[in-house]
Length: 546
Image 1 (cartoon, rainbow, N blue to C red):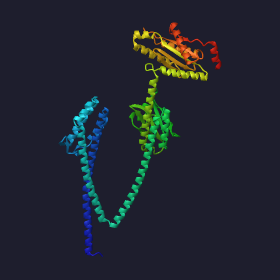
Image 2 (cartoon, rainbow, N blue to C red; image 1 turned 90 degrees about the horizontal axis):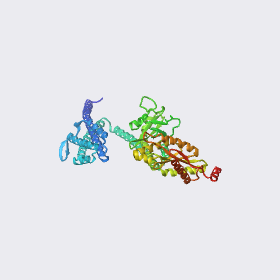
Image 3 (cartoon, rainbow, N blue to C red; image 1 turned 45 degrees about the vertical axis):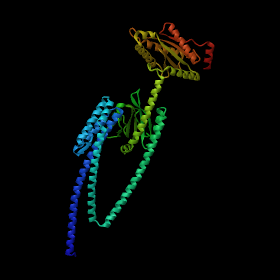
Image 4 (cartoon, rainbow, N blue to C red; image 1 turned 120 degrees about the vertical axis):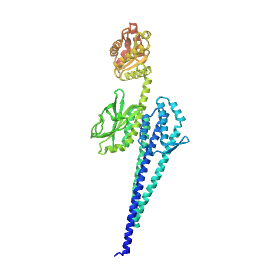
């Protein structure tokens, strides 16, 4: 039996333990309340400080590139305004004087607003001057520094409260548990934590290695794309890179076609038995293009999906644009049940692939425009004389090699100088452009229309006999004559030559067509004249060679 004295001691100890536990509970509760309050206050100040830093960055970027980043600035200020002002620093040293935190922030915001207003008005120099004269950067730094100091003070107070809580809890545990059990618990906890940390380190190493490999592969892709000569080359690079980095996913690339005003399927990979992609996509059919940001189409359910989306797959669609122009659409898809999560995992990598491809498409487009400008006449849109000479030489060589005809039609607008003198050069330019349009719309895809010089035009017609060329020229003559208006007569004279019917070389072909054109002028203009045939022995030799 327990002795009365021993029982009293046990009871006293139990009461003491109960009292200690109650006191500890009350103390811990008060410290936790203070800790929650401090964390809330610290979070509010941190959000407000981050918002001010983003607003400052928007203003600085605007002063650098001269474009007012209004939406970015307003979004940051709106987030700042959601935070309660009673948590801001009470006093801030600004321009050597103590002022209230709210007043300091208000002053900085007024300066920012004035700067952005000037930038929007096009007064970039004035905005920069205002930024310097009002010491906006120094004031902003002072406000942000004061807020950071307050956050550090709150964090220190929170750390102290957390320390008190931890100490009290440990003290209670020590009083309740035997030292042996405590040591075992600590040992087990340490072992478990060590295993978790080891797994985390191994996972971090694996992720870092994979990320490094992805970055290296993206660098290689960018380097290869710089060497791409056309869209086909770029598609090959993209397809190979995507299949290496995303082997479990399929994808498609759509490229914007100016002539069709739609996105056209350009490349695909790993489609297998998945849904067949659309051949074309309208700009208004895709939410990714409408929003200007990636969009995920789900295979079923009530979630927002694009009009062109085919059932049966999750599809991540990433818009591709450069300098404000839509270049294409990069799509990654999967039929896995967890496809939504998988696409979220690779969204960053997919965006990097799309960005690299966007740059390549922009470079290819720019190169095509430059080549076109170098080879085309800016007024009529026809090929220039330099291109004509090369095209004619190639056409003649091909005709001689494959034993078929090649003809040229030389065209001269009648009385064009008189038209310019009487109605002005602007009207003359209009007539010349309209005549070029008539010619282009009546030619075959293989024919080449060029501006030979001044009001002279020339058409190269591969695989076309002298007779067929004459018939086509007559249709062109009628079409050009139809451009006439009251008081303005428009007509053209045509000279036609052909190999082997009238000539045997490029030089002879040009001379024969020019002579035929001169004859058309001499005979009264607005007519088609063909060059005379070659001298019989020579022609017989050429025909026999066929």
